[in-house]
Each structure stands twice: as C-alpha cells, then as structure tokens.
Length: 309
Image 1 (cartoon, rainbow, N blue to C red):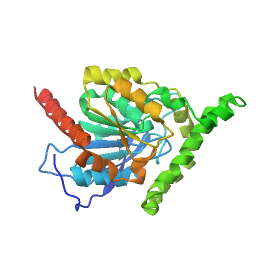
Image 2: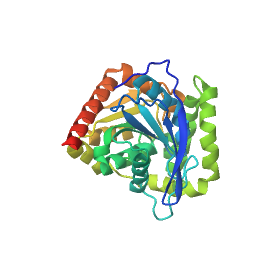
Image 3: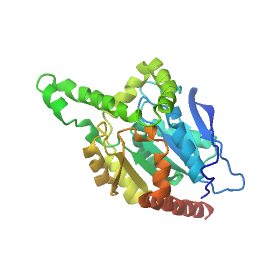
C-alpha cells in the first residue's frame, strides 16, 4: 500500500455518469499511481441530507496519507444527483448504482466507508458485492433499528402528550445539538464545505423525503450477521462518543450483530466533517486502525488470487 506522504497535494476531480437516464455525480481523488497496479481504492458514502462534496476534505487526507484513490459519490437524490424513481427507492437500488459507478471507473474491489445513512448503504453493498468489498468502515450508522428508539428527557416529556411526535422531535433536537461540534476548530472551512450540498438538497427536499421514510424502516441486522459469518468481510465500527443521533445503544446493537468492538472517537454524529484528518489519523496511528488496514491488504491479496485461479 502506497503512502504519498503528508506533503502531497491531492484534489478531487468531479465527474458524472448516466444510469437509466439519471445523472449520478461523483468525484475521484487525482493521486493516480500508474506504476502501482495494486493501488487501494475506497469509496466514501455520505449521510442523509449530505452529499459527496461534504467529505472531500476527508477523502483528500485519506488519499494523501494512505495512498488510496478515493471516490466520493453523491447518492441518488442528494448533492445534485438525480433521485431514484418513486417506487424504486431502496438500499439495494442505491448499492446497485454504486456498483455501476465502479464499473464505469473500472474499479474493483474497494474499501467502503459509510457514515450514518451511508453505513446502511455500505452494508447493502457488501452483501450484494462481497467480492468487490475489501472492508467496511461503518461510522455512526443507521443499519440497525436501535437509533429510532429515542430516549432521554425530551421524549419522556413529549410522549404523554404527543406520542407520535416524541421521537421525531427528539431526533431533530439531536441533530441540532450536533451542530456545535461541526463548528469547533476550523469552522470557516467546515461551513464552506457543507454549504454547496446543503443548498442542492434544499432544492430537492421533496424528492428525498421518501429516502428519509426508508431510513425509518431499515433493519439490516441479519445482513450484518451474514457479512461476518459467511463473507468474512472486515468491519471497522467507529462512533462519536457524543453522538445523540445514532445514540450509544445503537452502537452496542451494531457491535452485537457485527461481532466487532465499537471504537469510540471524539466528537458527535458527524465528527469526520468537523475534523477531516481524523479518519486518516485513526488508520495510520491507532493500533486497531492499523490492524484494519492490514486486514484489507490481506483480503486484497486473497481476492486477487481467487480471480486469477
């Protein structure tokens, strides 16, 4: 696995493809290494009401410091990508679009990073395309239903009066409480990275509501078990220790089904947006991060050997 060093200047190059008449927008890091046929690829899947552009800074760090080439798609309906047709909105359909994007770029296999909603898409992709998945970095994800069970003083106060609104109001409060974490550190560059995709998503809000409804029904617990037991795909689970959107019980629920310990990191639900160097730091300097890199490197060798055979 190559390492271009921290001084390398990596940019994200935008592009788009058409899938069944729909535009899917993406960007790819420009750190191509022509002499390295075994360069590791990764794909960075964003959360709900986000877009691929919000994670460019993080992907640039991963590309510069680990030598990975990183793809940032804007999933259907977000960040300027056209939505899926009504009646065809599902995780498998989104994962299928990712597969077609990889076909377009002639890329396989990949490390799949998934944040929040993107974590659920990562699980669906791993199940559908196990031989194209080196490993999954699952971050504050929504693949298991525990996050919908809202706890604390807000639902306790509201539930007796408005039981149907208690959970949505608590979720909105959790999102609002996550905002200050985004403003710590280099708040100017963080805000600048969020604004373009937020503006695009506001314009298409009516077309992404069905995706929000989908998130309220997701339960991938058995798929997670299958990935671990049958496919043996390495999974690294990371969680912001102050996350109130996908709260602690959700992390422990995922840990139970994935049979892998949750690694707690400083920050809230969107810690990687506020501190885009964090993911590369974890993989380069923390023992369990380095172990995950070793696992995906070993899996890459296995997949290449099986394809040759």
